[in-house]
Amino acid sequence: MTAEILSHAELSELLDMIQSLVSCQDMDNFIPIARRLEYLTGCEHIIFAMPELPGNGETAVADLNISYPQEWVDMYQACEFWRINPIVLSSLIQNGPLCWADVYRRYRADKKFMKLAHDFWGLKDGYTCLTRPISGGNWSMVSLAGDFRKQDSKLDYILDRTAPHFHLALMAIKKKDGARKLAKLTGREKEALKWLQQGKTSWEMSVILNVSEATINFHIKNIKKKLNAVSRSQAVATAIHCGLINVCP
Image (cartoon, rainbow, N blue to C red):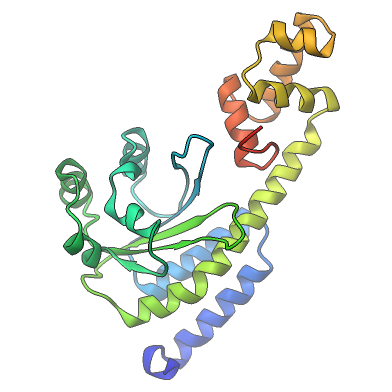
């Protein structure tokens, strides 16, 4: 069956790609492997996303853009199109690779979203595959845009076998990045970050930790600097994304 779907060269490339992903733990190695997937599938654009599920039940998405038009990615996030994108909504309830054309035939999509994606950016056809761990935790999604107007057994085969390995590589990178950022925080900063997540003010934290409010503000300033954040909420979001603190306190 495999021989009928992939050529010997394609199968060799697929196996080598999977082997590379097994040992991948940093973004410098991940991106070239993603480019190889782009070449193997013949897609025009590729992007990875890591949906997270905050306590309020909404789905937030962090993107790792490989070759999508960045202007579209920025617009997609700013307008929160992931809330109405039938591809994302279908992926959340259906396992395995999804051909966009099949989803669009089954579900009516928002006209504004479709017009922007199709007419303005040319993102009309493609494939998306979401990986969900059985025991909970982070999800990951890979989307390929290209001339895929119908279900393709070759794309199904490649994505079905590579998506889990891309997912594990992304989680390994995230864990390593989180550990690196955590190591930079002092014990007091970690404690302040915990209370910051719970929405405590500087004054409230000064009472809880029995230090001055100026000391708390000093810790928060250092936390934002170390996490490359410009606000308290961004610092908390970064800490959650990197696994420094849990989504639910």
